[in-house]
Length: 587
Image (cartoon, rainbow, N blue to C red; front, side, top):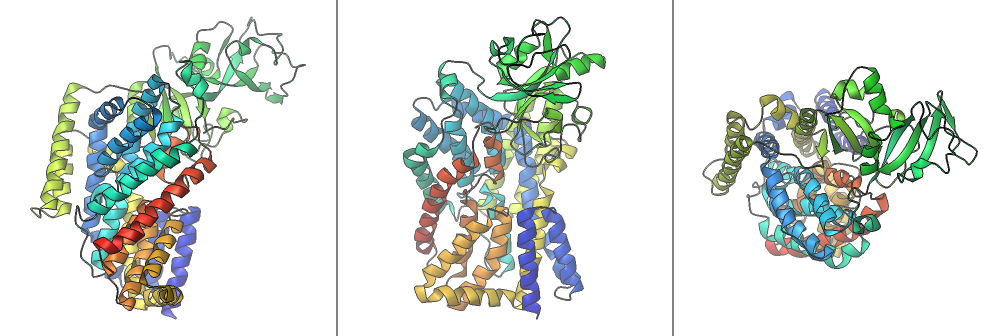
């Protein structure tokens, strides 16, 4: 019964990971408790994974990445590389993707996407290219670049640690580099030659006319006393001069229809959709004002000298899933929301009642140090350029040097990887590139708990015989078609599981079954393990990957856009994996 009990828990975990109604870390810890209470694992086995050196290594890399970002080193690299790739859209995209992939081979792909987001949008505007043509390739390049080294993505590090736990050798720093470079190169070629045909081109007319800010935000404007708009018809008013679309009118807490008979009155709150540059002009036009500014003035707060910036909410933001009203946004952040936007959708609810999603764009106003605080805490990404002090950059360069030395030391076996990266993280803290509080905030604790817990779960599968049972089912079904077919089955399963689950979770679920299947077949377990790891890293069928979520709003993409471009890219790179893994790691 034990194998079926563990398989049942695995199925429940997959469902819970997919729905995310309960946080993945809580699900993982709950599974460990059930395994201990059920007698499958003892306490030492259940929590042994949290003492794995992979946990220390990943935590250190999170801190180093945050330090390089906060000191402006990554922004400088991103801006420089983005500015040096000028020309036609395909040429620009190819140069940008090569630059992004090179950095993403050594940094978390979400951090790299966030780093390039602002510079790439600025470059697109200068060249008269729609940002949507470049932002999707940006996110895909950051994901594929992670296949080039062990530390290119947290999934690689997690699988390496799990393989050691399963009796295999850990993956070397550059062991996957040859196949990773080929995967990345094929991915770029596919995107430039085929994928770019499917990448949408949104708002090109605005770009070519030089209007700059092309995104149409939702904002609330108040009709002030003696405004010339009073008495004007909603369908034919001065709002048209500002190129605003009147979406809804609220008068004394009641919504009015927007038709030819509706006229504006003093005090009306008008929900409009308009471009950033025009929304900012509203603050200077007599007779109307942005509702948020009116409320702030009534509270005695002067925002005349405040900074205004566009930001993207990250998947890690605590604001995701809440409304502006329910989250007490202004009191909680010290920032006020002037407008918001979600992809290419026109929102019809008043801003205070809109449930915020990861990838939403907000036009915020407030002290710039507040923007920096929330960017440091990985809650939002500012997509407007900002400056850093010379001292901060020098400290960041020292951290960058320490990071390069850590990679070198771990590659040549001078130091264990966990120790090398921990030393680099301590240097970042000692040189005050990042505060201790900010360092803790930038560590993805949910991922670390997931890795530690799923490592223990693989022990439970081995002790109970669940891995043998599942491996037997897969091999029985696919073995008649050959060992390569069995390998393909596990790769496809991994790709499919990464859609509802995180890449690391999918890889850690499939890995022990794949290793056991390889053992049963007398095949090379390492080849199966690496194939599963790479399959988890190239899955871009949908925009659920954090790097894709970051570009979803700024690019004004639709869900179908990612399916069109990402499905082809996934199939092409999966074919490369199945063709080349047996070459580099013979079956």
